[in-house]
Length: 286
Image (cartoon, rainbow, N blue to C red; front, side):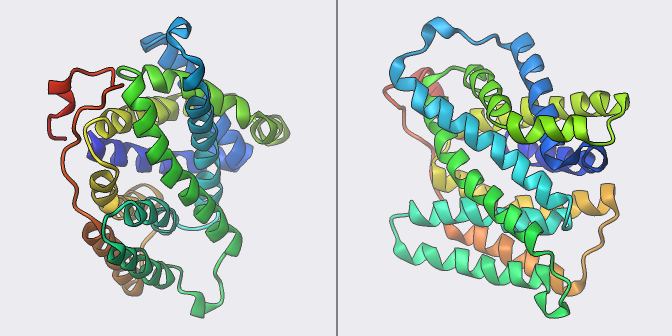
């Protein structure tokens, strides 16, 4: 589920580039989330009655983090190659995996990944897009928080019901940046169709699979598995956007992947007392 989700996320990011050209990164992200709400509510209408007051802070936080994670990443993808943006963004969950490890030496892996990112951006050429790098770092911060909050919310709500609650929040919190770009850009009707198709991939399929995967895995196990996502970014960028990496950049992405794989190896989660799943299901390997 996690691997399929990673491929889906990178494909949707690549397909979003043409939408970004017409309505901007924030506009593209907002449209994706709006259509995501429609699809999710068709599949799993949220049960408002099941909400508890103690659930609201995590739901609101996850919704906000999800919205800005998507917005910041698309802003980065509009400025720098997809594989580079994903590698920089990956520093976020990798750092979370290191911080949550029982061994402090695990923090050396984010530093190794940082070296890989430097090779990817090739700053010695003098043409690095600092705003693109900055947006990718902000997306990475949101991504790290997203992983922690998704597991927490996934413990409380069965299936994708939590997702059907958080994506509307994501759409709401990004209205101030998304809506002006949609109506202020070069809007055409095909953009709506494209955004709807992309929304079916991400957030509906991808985020749903991530939430289900995180119910069965530790933070560190999921963070380790995420080590291959930058490679997916390079691959999808090459196949869909014709973004060919240099040899130095390939070495950089290899370092990022190595850092992610070595950061931590986790096990299967034990049952959470507040989990909506049965103990036997929660203990199954991912």
